[in-house]
Amino acid sequence: MLKLVTRHAGASETPAEPRKAESILDLIGETPLLEIRKISRGLSPGVRVFAKLEGFNPGGSVKDRPALKMIQNGIKSGHLKKGKTIIESTSGNTGIALAMIGRALGYPVELVIPSNVSSERKRIVAALGAKQIFSDPLEGSDGALRLCRKILTDDPEKYFKPDQYYNPMNSQAHYETTGPEIYRQTQGRITHLIAGIGTGGTIMGTGRFLKEMNSNIRIIAVEPEESLHGLEGLKHMASSIVPGIYHEEELDEKISVSTDNAYSMVYRLSQEEGVLVGQSSGAAIHATLELARKVKSGTIVTIFPDFGGRYLTTNLWTAWHEKTKVGNLKFSI
Image (cartoon, rainbow, N blue to C red; front, side, top):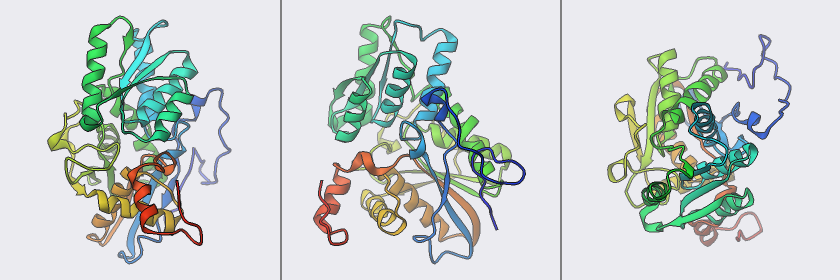
């Protein structure tokens, strides 16, 4: 029976004391692994499904990890100095992470964001004091990337751009933290890793570490089924600017998920497991269960990039509002 190890538990496998932190940044990483039991009923007895809950990071998402690593590397290399402004294009979570880190370290932050990202994300960024520059919603994350490049070109001395799509420190953060945590938490028994593709940093870095530990572990990416989709944070690679840190040849497989199927899994997770997540997590668990039904044994780990509180005003939940009632209370925004 797999007994999960959390934090840096000792040989006795007893839980460690909660961490004491001198800075909010010290709380990034060491997120828990949750076994998904109810919606995985009916699988072969030898199959177990787990989700790494990245919403427990202080900025609320998996993006805290690469954002911190890229900023630390920028300071170490001398490219980020006092007086410079951090600028980045983002669909939201990286922006929140950079806004938090910039505030903690004393750097101003400007973020180029598609104007149709959820209002919750916009409000969180604003609350952290970052300036928001909105790009064309129809151009998605690629449009934000192009506008950010233009702003940087017009005033290169003012800014430091972490460049999450091309900075190898993005995937390196996951190589150094996410991968080792998952391997330790499953006691090395992980057989499959399934994660969505945004910048590609999570799947590339985590997958590279796990492959080095055991080359038989299968690394499987998840992407939207179509170019026009409702899965914030995920990229349909065939129709997108491919991030420089993404190397598809390193993957064992790629699974496409429709917006409807991803949304359905978000609803099931909230109602059956009591876990409220975002669209990309819904896509990840849909792909995970699709694969899990095909195998007879294995420890399958997927990554839930964030929790769902920052999506309650998006189509994800307005659609739910039209379809159903929760208990005796009508769900409303």
